[in-house]
Image (cartoon, rainbow over all chains, first blue to last red; front, top):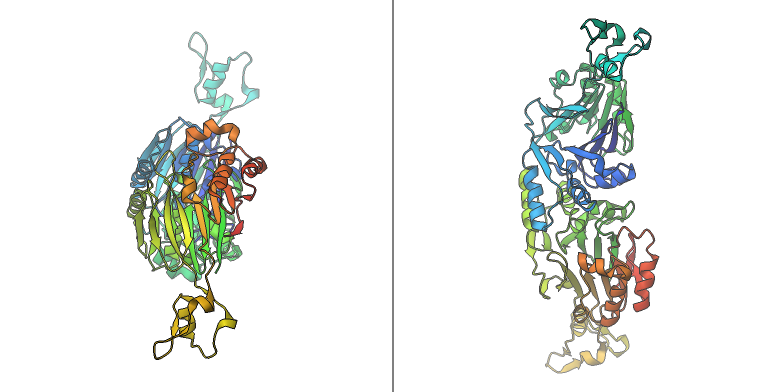
Length: 303
Length: 303
């Protein structure tokens, strides 16, 4: 099953020509999850030819404008496109009030429900689950309440070993084997053991999105072994003091966290506009964790 | 004195790659006025190399998102740039509540005051005046309260006729003549009459911004003789019924209004995304009023 991340924007707050505010789309099978929604995210979606209507769940990390100012335009466009299905929105408390105020003052009710779930940004807990993924919050430490999100694929089915299968099994019986059930004959005797006829699926893949935060060593436990980790890297380590003052991390720290957590891949982003050239940030992170990439706009990474 | 309009965006609500929502900058001498502020206006300002700090007054026509969703990002960036001077904001009631709610919920106070003046969208009246212009509201008829804005240059000074000036006048005396005052000698006798030594200045230039509206014949009186008229032209006239249902005008109607009002130039904009090619809209408007241009992004027109 497809499990991939597309970067729509990875600039930090000060805007810069050609770099856009944070937004990402995670594709898991046929489901699309939008993670943060900086200004003009809808334009990035059009550029990437992603159909808006496929997005059913949106996760906002925190209420700094560079992470959610694109939400209003996107909701408006979904309305104009005739959406009726509810949209599930997750984020810190207050986001619902902002949306409600805006809709009321502009006299423009949406043609669909926004089902808002406020998240507790201090806790690591399951906040939603569908056929494709489970989503957990990841507590961040920033200037205002902020949380990341961990997406864990639902367990996949066991795989059939064709040569170990007797002839004549029905589709239902094959399905049962992939679910880890044995197949019995009419008398109730075991006909095929799932352990003989199937192998265990690969472990569920995980994507961990760590939004704006200072370096937190204890985060490593929560994202341990992730297939893909996104971690902000607003500054070079020479600006550590500024990073701490503003509630951000350095590229070296992002690399350190990836190393500590033994993840498989690291993406760094949320680059300060002071860095025209992003290569030094990449070099710094790679010194700590080699399998690192820059979260450049338009990049798609398989998880 | 410079008096020119730059188009930052002229798309209607449904977004489209490469066309942005409504925003314009009017430059009068050293003053910049921002008129409407669709999503990602700050990016358009950067593209046009317009310094954000020069904007002191922002005029919002109405609270449909395609006319103001860029305001929050712009305010945030002004804050990050260290602005302290107050910013004057004009628009329909409710806009202040939207901004206040957003700032409160995101825990991010701005480092400058936003001085909001609610406008009465039903009346034509003077709402602000500075050294460069007087600004009047223009009542629009749309689905929600909406107003346009008329910018009238402050009267310019009389021009000196060098050959009619006696030698030895002081700078103050020359200034007095340009203000329409006669110059007297110490005994109080008229030394130079302003009527002899100066000519009247050209009449004040005017720019009329007509935002989302159905065709209103009575608007012609309010914008009569304008040097430049912007009028929305969302649809071709074959879609008149749809225009009326949605509170919009057709290109033909925009041309008719320019003709009725005997303006000097017409700009049409707010194009529906159904028109990939805008030429038919231009052709239709020009049939009614020849001196018409499309309000294309990046276009600058002298008023």
